[in-house]
Length: 199
Image (cartoon, rainbow, N blue to C red; front, side, top):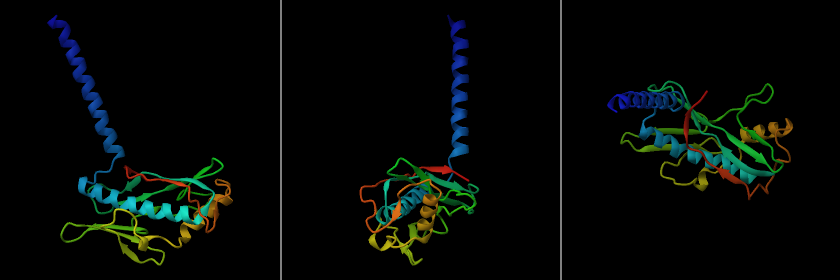
C-alpha cells in the first residue's frame, strides 16, 4: 500500500509545482509589479479619469448604448520611474456596433487616455495621495479626496474625444453617434480598474 502511495504523492507534488509555477509566470507576464499602495493610487485615480471621460461622452453624444473601459494598461519597467499607464473606452452604439477610442483608424492613431496628458498621480511629502485631472482649459484640478468626479473636474469640451468619435463614425465603425446637447442619458458606463501590462 505504501509503495502505491509514494508515486501518487510524487505526482501530486509535481502537479502542484507546475500549477503554482504557471500561475506565477502568468502573473509576472500580465500583471504590473507596482506594490499595493501604488496599485491603489492608480486604481483610485483612473476610476476618476474614467468617470470624467464617460460622463463627457454620455452628456455630449447621442446614439450611445454603452461606454465600457479597458483595464488600466501599464507600460514600462517595473521598479523604474519610467512607467506609463492608460485606458481606452469602447463605445457601443444603438445599432450593435462597437469601436474603441485610442486605436488606429486607417493611418491615424489617436491618443489614449492616461498619465502625462490627462491625469497626474503622485504622493506628497507626507505620503498622501495626489490625484489631479485636467479640465477643458488644461488646468489641473485636485481630486485627491474625491470619491466621485466633482463638478469642477467635468469636461465641457474635449477636442481629442470629439475628433476620435467623428473619425470612428466616418470610418463606419459607429452609426448614428452624433455630438449634440441631448447626449445619451440612458447610456451605461462600465468602469474597469484592473491593472494589466500593456503596450
